[in-house]
Length: 108
Image (cartoon, rainbow, N blue to C red; front, side):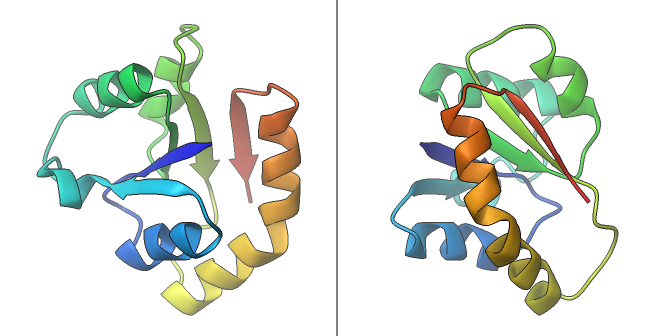
């Protein structure tokens, strides 16, 4: 699995994903921090990446049946450490859900 972390989420999340052995990119590393959602989605589709974002607009893009998947983070504003603890707790389920072929995952 390959991941693309959107701009509203910290680079620390991207590094955390890398520490799990996954290919990951953060939009800021690609110069896409100010890019439109459609541009980010197109890149994710072309590279078959899972977009991780708080932006609900990706939900509508994901429902169009492209190659990319979407993890919709709906945890509200929180400190990076809290976000990473939540991902640590939820990660096994995220992996299993993506492995099962689900394309949209909502995290609360």
